[in-house]
Length: 424
Image (cartoon, rainbow, N blue to C red):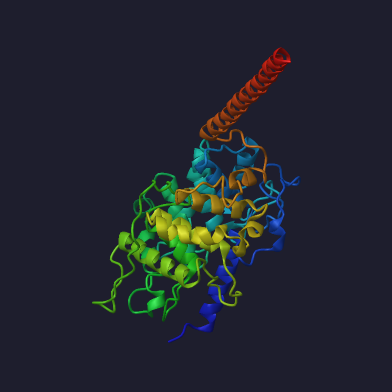
């Protein structure tokens, strides 16, 4: 039986809110603007931060940290200052002296992302603890999370929250148990098994419908990280390493479902890889009513999830599409800190170089959307210094060769002239 209209409407509202926060396909065009905002000291980007201010700042920190960049203290202060008194985070609040409305202003995704970011930059243990306490206090009766207090449990918010506990060094299956249920087990109930049609097996639904689960790309990419106990930061793949993708095998059991988180991770990777291949390297939005245009943000998320699973070849396919001129990624990400951060995190995890993404230095572009970082990374500084030194040495050597050549030619002409004078 098809899901009810009410379920579709609820899913659409939840997905729309998440899309706005994540800056995906339906985000305002104003987010393309990208110089530091004079109205909010420390905030990355100049696009309207109403929906994604905290989220884009958090992603920026995570990407910078992965590349050895330490954000400016003013930027960290801005993010920490967004936290509400009870530990939750809003999408954005312009007046931090005004108390938050727990029912309207605070979001699971923003809180979980901020916790991951503040844990990465360090020195904000109290803010991290308060954020995790807020998440535990706002778990649903099912043991997962909705995108806002009182919202139904959804796979995307549950996945991001799981990543927050993992980033803080805690096991979410033990640290966040509600009514005897842990969020990892809850997340697995959103996965589609062998009973569905072939193209949806292994995917995760966004919301749990009473009669059916519907494959959702945004939720599937997020779950690809959470089922492996990871947040947005993923250690880069080592050169030469690659694991083949193993889709959910339904040949012997048409009712089969992944038995645990590890099996669920492999199954969703199989779904993501197959769907990317079917679309030529990108994913489409799953939100009902969204235009069937490439979803750059979710495509980057899928690359990150596949890299987290050790699938180098599978992760490289969406990254190849994102780097292509035809994809329009350059324009999509231009000046947008959240989008630039997603590309950095995915490229870095897959073992690529975010400083050379189809000729663009994504790290420099991200740094340029906010206040000057405190440090740009010792490893990169050494690399740049060596490059500069090698360049200088090379120039010096060639100048010496040129001077020696000219001098030799001059001496040759002089000796030749003297010889001719002697002959005359």
